[in-house]
Image 1 (tube, rainbow, N blue to C red):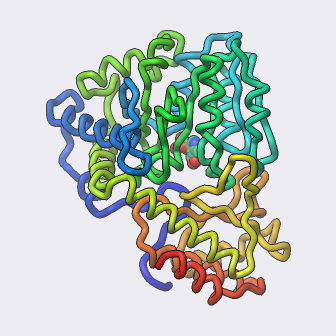
Image 2: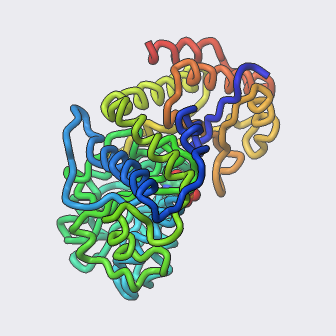
Amino acid sequence: MDGDFLLLNPGPVPVSDGVREAMSAPMMSHRSAKFEAIYERAQSGAEYVFTHSTPGETDTSVPGETLIFNGTATMAMEAAVANVVEPGDEVVSLVNGKFGRRFARIADRYTDAVTRVEVPWGESIPLADVDAAVSDETTMVTMVHNETSTGLQNPAWGVGRIARESDAIFVLDGVTSIGGDVFSLEDWCVDIALTDAQKALAAPPGTSAMYLTERAADRIDGESAPFYEDLDWHLRKADSHQTPFTSAIPLYLGLAEAVEEIESEGMPARIARHHRQARAFRDGFTEMGLDLFATASDHTVLSNTLTAVSLPESIRGDDDEFMAAVAERNVSISGGQAHLGGEIFRVSNMGRFADEDIVRGVRTVGEAMTDVGVDVDTDAGIAAANRRLE
Ligand SMILES: Cc1ncc(COP(=O)(O)O)c(C=O)c1O
């Protein structure tokens, strides 16, 4: 085994020692002033991330509230849909990967009028197609900003403007972008934004955060949502820094610490680091002779928080030996999801990686490819990654 265990999966990502220590505090009542202070720390740190993720520390806040949920981002996705959409309402869902598909499937449970703007996973959705699908009858547009299953970043600014022109609610899943990449509530006309704890926020899995603008809050009907996801109730309790039901206290402690670490680093510096490290991964893999999976065209770009790489022909369809060769080196990466299983591998640079970790990821993939008989130039890959990181 070489070196410490390196977790490069696109979530959960490694957490800092400070986050781990925070989670080991003695138990407390979730209705105590002590817990309210922790919720408030998590809430204000998450709010900092939601409102300060544009270059130059510009504040992009719009009136609204940050909520922290007991439950991962899928719960937040469902809460966004269930509180706004009534049976028969028209929803437009962008689908070019697994999580875009999940949003559409959630919407299917609340209305029978979901229009999918769909292209094969890993391809870009033309804004013109979104424009054609959205009309004044559209209640909600759902979009995954950074498609974790493919390594593409969808054009939030363009889709948000289309939604706003039709007065539709724009819900943005920023699970693998918010906390690691540029994001703007104001410029992108986002009405509801959500993210997960265990991705770019580098907190433990189990909670998620939502920014619910007043514009969206005016259109919610909590009683039409599942009992646990009633956003009117969550908003009322958040006023006093509590959750409606028992809070996952250790996870809130970990999240509060993680978002404060982000605030100390500052979002502009954090975004610049994520961009640099993602480019290093991309250059490292392509220079060694591998191909990136996704095709970025129109206004869609490659992700700055994770990289998806096509498996070479000779091992496509069966990645067991390659994955074992990676694991032997004490590194963990992810394969493809759903029909992309055996077709691609994915690595993340979300959170707090040192540049050496990125280089180690490139070297590990190169060596593992060589072990399974793929002819790659690992040294060229490492040199290219290092050039980007300088
Ligand atoms: C873009 C995106 N959205 C939603 C989710 C769902 O998150 P969870 O499984 O934590 O609910 C994920 C998980 O990987 C994701 O990457």
